[in-house]
Image 1: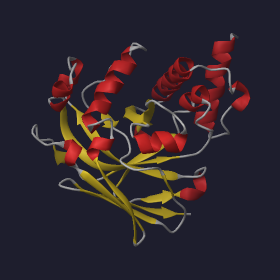
Image 2: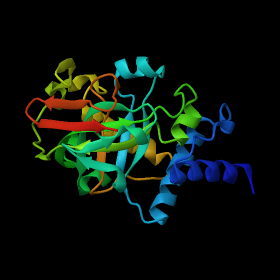
Image 3: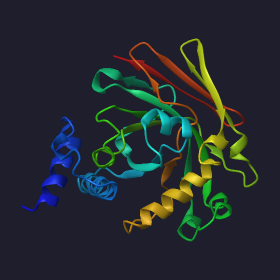
Length: 254
């Protein structure tokens, strides 16, 4: 058994069996190596009948980069068995230090295959969703290789009602306002997400091509948080309002 195979096997078992992240590889994986392992783990999921629903782009916001101590975006795989809908209950007892990110998610169409510019991206989506990503603090993000191999903190997503994409909609001006129970947490416009949330899709398409992977029609892309990651616990009700696009909410239970 080669070392590369051992690394993949250890991260696959950790993900599939929900056991602790294999920290014996800390400090030994580059970002590229960790990213490739993550992709290969996703291939294993698909071989076991769990479809890759789409991808998430992480750390697209300077505030989140500062919070995590990183300087560039990353990506993770979204699986169909971890997709919830607005109003759902999120079981926190099954998660390790759960946090919420408020984002816009986009459903891709066939034009994504040839898209190369931001203008092309505006032609490559059919629907937009108000959304949450729920993540876990399984490993310090400062070890980027292990963090990316461990799916960049990702666990699942919560989607609001889809809104048909309009080619002239300026997502830079969409304001997200986040509430925890009855308290206003913060608000921010879409321009904090790589200048425009559609830029996240362009970044992701170009990054995945390094690993001979493609974005395809029907995938859902989470484009990155408008605000800093929010820790949550049992009893919390989390709600985000996106101006002109609707709301998403989730009830955190034990």
